[in-house]
Image 1 (cartoon, rainbow, N blue to C red):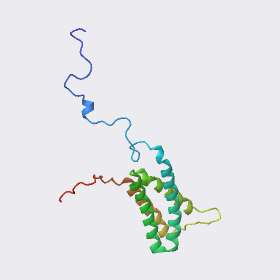
Image 2: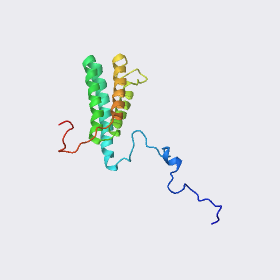
Image 3: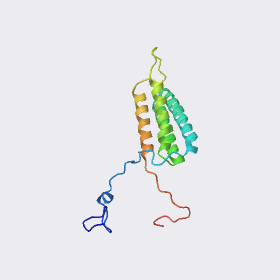
Image 4: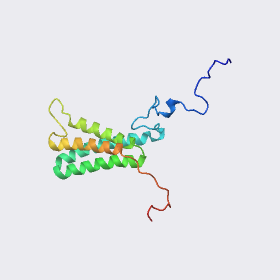
Length: 158
């Protein structure tokens, strides 16, 4: 090696500028999938999808039949399912999968046939049911997880 040749890379003891600026890597994690899906959980996700679809159909029927209280009851049931999926599986996907099943079921039951038959009619109640369920699913899917404390530890302030 000659005297004029410079070593490639940063000098010893110095950091590269690209490493200190915090530029994102090429494979940034998505919103819901921060880690690969465990193959053993796929039946649970399928069950939550079906349960979300059944909740959407039942909620649409109940909200239309018993207007003020039925709407509240159907949205509470949907919210409980979405939060329960998140809590049971410990992932955000636990709320997104039943939310998707719920949304697909509600959209299918509100769309009319060529004869004009509709399972869930239009109106203010149906709009509140649709928008409220979507908002609940998004809230439950984007909630931050609470930190898990070890058993037997003292609470702060005690």
